[in-house]
Length: 226
Image (cartoon, rainbow, N blue to C red; front, top):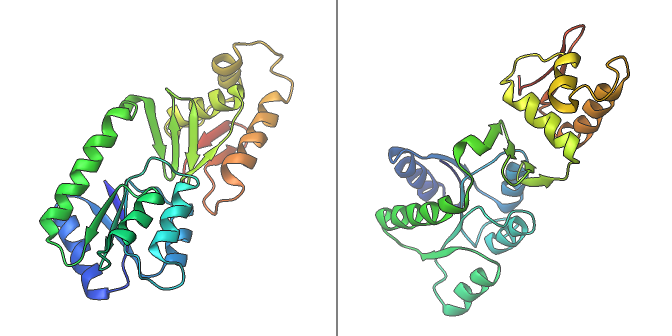
């Protein structure tokens, strides 16, 4: 499980990450809200920990921004502000939990595990979720996300993406694609496959530094972050 921490207290940030990593989480730490928002555009996390009083963009605004495109990833606010008005503001912005500093790390761990357990039943089973770098394909719901943002695909675009992803980095030929995605419903001498590959590249890769869809000249196509 990957956690992204927004905390500008360098000592507390380091101690929290060490504690979480000792409990089998991975933890990335960010010290200001602006950098945090850039980080989540190109990376996928299972839970966010947000301090409120941080530089550039405060934690509540970060929470609200996350919820504008990601309704599901759990968010815990960790803050020295303990007034009910502060908590109300956080929950109004759709935070899942609020923990007032100072707190015991074990209590934070209990709350993290509780949120992750609560989230798990609504998730598709592992076999229905494909994760490649920051790309997430939910086969059950026929939804695709990259960098936390949902990407809208047509049915054929989705089927082509799933076929490439399930090849697990192997190159698949144009012939194989037509057999599995189109079931030979068009002449393989046409450029339909190339057209749909270009459609996918514009939606999946265009706005990201790491490109996932690749051409192996003379052989076909493969999907990989490498």
